Length: 142
Length: 142
DNA sequence: CTGGTTAGTGGGAGTGATTGTCGTTAGCGT
DNA sequence: ACGCTAACGACAATCACTCCCACTAACCAG
Image (cartoon, rainbow over all chains, first blue to last red; front, side, top):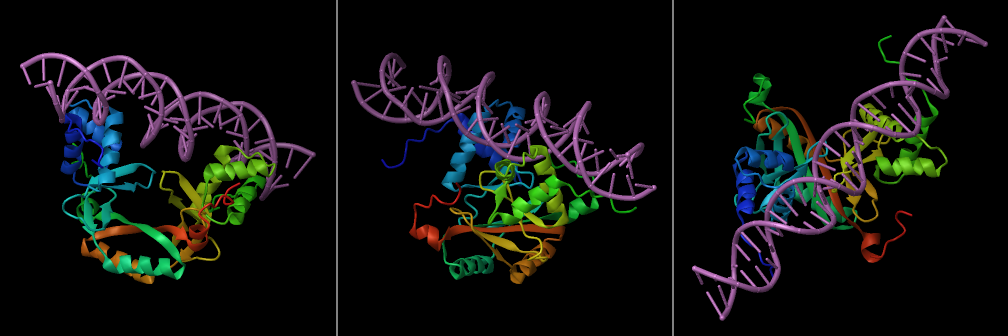
């Protein structure tokens, strides 16, 4: 009743599936390209639409890459709780990290300045060991 | 010899001055508009160029606003050290916060997963007390 | 199974931020 | 004051993302 009707479409599943399969964060454009590669020429608009709804449903996370591009990652079932990411800026490999201390700190800071409805973003970028050694990391994206 | 020559231009000073005067984070476009308003029609390219160099010099901070726009803030003299921000998502008021614990935690996480060249972003968004009360805050931006 | 209703689709145009180009302008050392 | 060249600025180009709208196909009766 309350929930708007959601039709299960082929494209919706495809987008979700790509997101699930990809290891780290992928941009909408990446996903669109991957879909075409798989022989499923899903429209760009559709990709964005599904990405947005996945985010709203809480099964996907968005972070803004340093160059201002929005990147998405499937984080649904594994982590119902709030968490953050440690992302390799070369291969895109992502580790999920939780830090209760950070959450507490954020809440503390917020109350200290009397801010309400507090939200926060914490992302750590670095270079993972494999990428550091084999600087020619070309196997990331086929 | 070694250092590249830096010419002190009127426009450079103007951009910097606008950044210093503005309370919170402003987008490049905002700054450009402010400059025109002040009767200094500085070119948009020039604004971006100066903003970038200010960031490189470490006197300005950039964060990506939720809608993907880059926003800049003057953070030079007050804080030579690494710090983060608590931003009111209504009026844009910004508090600077430092958290050695966070820095330590980030470094710890990084070494745990053997990541090097680590960088991180921590931004806290909330609604400050004044904005919460007077929910009809229209005085923020003219 | 069939038909109607309408959410979902797609592609192309539109938008808005940011970058690149290149001839012109104006600091700065001589 | 002169000349060299960094900096400027207007516009074109790019790029991620959104909008529009006619078309397709899911879902629900009958």
